[in-house]
Length: 373
Image (cartoon, rainbow, N blue to C red; front, side, top):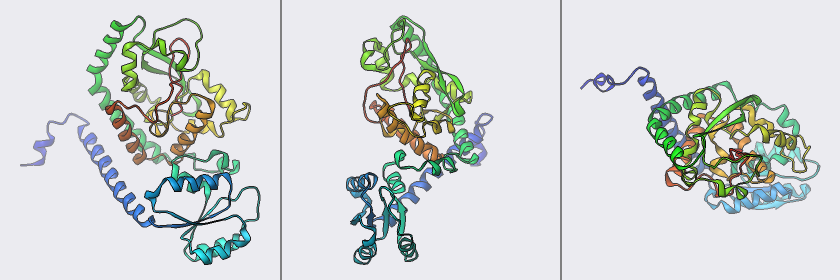
């Protein structure tokens, strides 16, 4: 039987959609095979830690929690003058440099080690690889300001945008009946509008109107930021919609309008952005380094921080989410988007939510989550 018999029923544009889906599946399978081979090659690596800075200690702790990596710490050297002895004694496969303060770096010895086939990297890179987040407080300002790491290549942005457009259009078409049912249920369940509208900060600091299903009873006046002060306002239907993230579905319209992607850092309300920007500039007692770099990409319905962390309930937790957000900005790719979408779908279909359970933050009459990712 000829192939065109099978493809003939496809509507206009259907061929491109099928090819895009095949491409995504192919990339997913290829990346999985590559990652498996890479992990096997890295198994059994012997690490020598140079330095005892707080970041170096966190690297040691993370390796202790990840026995599946097969990494073994053969020594921790604090005195750089004893590094040559430690190298000869332990024969490491990798040297992780985590010196605190401003000690003299043994450049010559480290270069000799690299020439002998020993991998040499900073504790910042090791921590990033182990945790999937950035050690913001350990990043030199110059290495961020003058680096291209947080200016994603146009090809990567184009690929992730195409993925969002295709899947967003397909998702909106498939979910139209469900959207109608939810809208009717909201009107029958409680007084108030069907949709929640709020001004959010998007790519490059531009504002846009985010659309969600309303999940709380309307109230006049300014309310607390945190859900612990507003949980009595969540409607019966709202609890169910939040659990399965169905209140987020109208944001597919934001995706098709070009204001959002399916995956990206969660857009912050305009009212909260000023406070967080001040924290990023060190004008707040709890600083959030490099916060503004989140705006280098389009915000998303879901994101790396969503699947790796929880809702932020304080500036301290917000900083933790920014670590994941900036990891995504630095490593944005079609593969990473596909991975996040798979993990999101798994969490939604099981009803277990995204990330670790935590308090949801809210604001004002149309109280909403303060999500960094």
